[in-house]
Structure formats: C-alpha cells, structure tokens
Length: 257
Image (cartoon, rainbow, N blue to C red; front, side):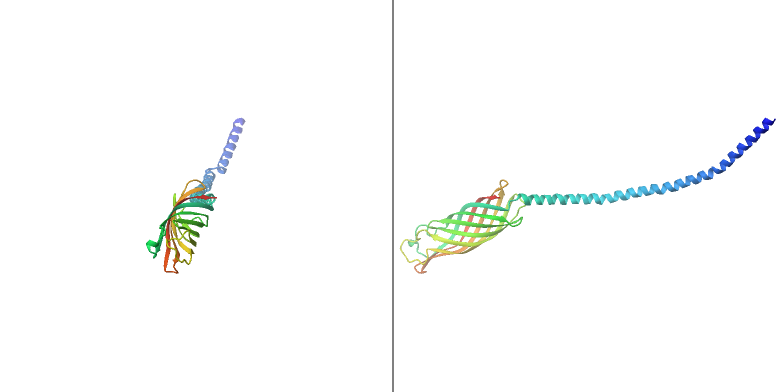
C-alpha cells in the first residue's frame, strides 16, 4: 500500500513538472519564435533580390561603356599605326610630254623649222614631305626640251590628297622660276636680237592620282597647267616669239623614306 502511495506521489510530481515545462516551452513561445524568424528572413530575402536587380541594371551601362572604350582604343591604335607606317619624306621622278602655247608675228618664210614648236619632251624630279595626313609639299626641277631650245623651271607646290581610297587623287598649286634658252636662232636670216633667253616667274595648278605599289614605292600620273611669259624680241621688238603657257602630262614613280 505504501508503495502504491509513493508511486502515485511520483506520478503526480512528474505530471506537474511536465505541465510547467509545457508552459515554459508552450505553443505561444514557439509561435513567437516562428514569427521572429519570418520577420527577420523575409526582409533579408527581399533585400537580396533588390540588390541583385540593381547590380544587374548597373552592369548594363558598364558593358556598353566597355564596348565604346574598346572601339575608341582600336580606332586610336589604327590611326597611330597609319601615322607610323606612312613615309614622311619622299623623292620622285617623272617624264612625259608638253604642249606649249607658242605664238609669233615673224613671217613664216623667215622661221626655221621648229621655231614655233608646240610639243616637247619633259622630265620632272624633286623631293617632298607630308605636312599632314592629307597635305604634302614638293620642291621640284623641270626641264622641257623643244626643237631649238629648252625651258628650265624650279618650282614648289602645295597639294591636298585624298588618302582613304586605293587610288589617291590629289590637286594643288605651284609657283616658281622659269627660264627659256635658245640653242640656235629660230629664224633664217640674220637679224638683231635683244635677248637670246628670257626668264621670269611661273605659276600654275596640277592634279593627279597616286597608286601604292609596295611599302615604299608608288606610281603616279599628273596633269599641270603652267603660266609663264617667255618672249624673244627680234629686230628691236619688231618681231617676237612668245611662249605664254604649257600643259604637261606626266607619269612617274615616288619613293618614300
């Protein structure tokens, strides 16, 4: 009987302890803990998502900026490469034909054959430099052979050239000094002559095209219209032979160094 009483007391005590533990660790505490976890986790998840979206959006302009910078860099490298590979100085030589504007009031019966020669052979050579990517200048010497003499000229030119095409056209202006020398008198009968040579300023225009052959060599063709005033006075100005202008057609080669 006593054992039964002791067992009942122990059972009652354990039940009380379990009940008290249930109050301490009851459902209210569990619910509160779950709510706290939900409150802490949900904003955190939202923040993470928003941060990812903002990061992705901010990456878009960065990618675009990177592409733009890459294109600019490639273009700069290309321009630098062109500038470094092109030769700044060059020399050239060319030959061709000249068509002269020759006039005279000397009677034809008194003229020697070739006195009014309107066609000659020309050689042109010189040196030059590129001032910019499209502008170049030359210093040249030119010799035109006619039947009874020759015309020697020294001139400088300033030219603009289109360089972004395979066949590079150019045009420019020239100015210089020219002299006509008669190797023999252009008339049959001996007459008084004031001067057997004439000289003066010459000026004109030119245009042409250039084609690259190798890294240093190129070929070109050009046309020149040159104005000058060479006059041979005969019999104290009674007669004269004048050369007013010339048109030159030339082809040649250029070497860059």
